[in-house]
Length: 203
Image (cartoon, helix red, strand yellow):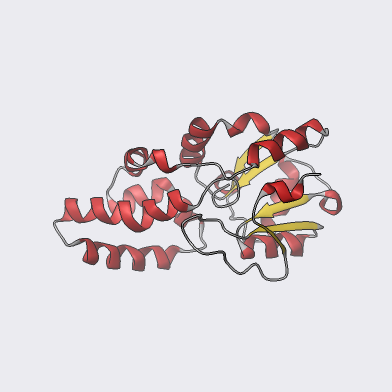
């Protein structure tokens, strides 16, 4: 979801700018000191379910994370041509699943802001399965909840480790997002097909 369907600028700004700002105000330290401390704490949890968990960070940082997200929720934005692509896929009779590492509280906020939920047959977070998408075992557990044929499935994601895990599982069609955050330069996409816009996947 984040970086694939939605502009990753919201999440990057939230964790790298907004949370350090509020943390500094509450702790009475400089923004630079707050950011340095938080970056180290983020890095220690990177790639784990805890990193994606609103509940974990609310306890860890003693902050109302969802309240802080609401303060900058105006930055939540859908990437160009996403809704047209999803509508076309649904119109072609394909089943569509949103599978995200985002915590269910973040998912609820973003779906309320964007209205994208209506385009999906199935919404699930890695927290529900108890494992992050970066691990191939995730797809085995997903298969039990949302049966799909990996050989006839398309996975679009902005994370190379997630695409790698999908490839190990046997998902045949893989597409990476060239610029997940519109405020940052395009990123390396390995040997995966990379798109600048979902318009490139439409007839």
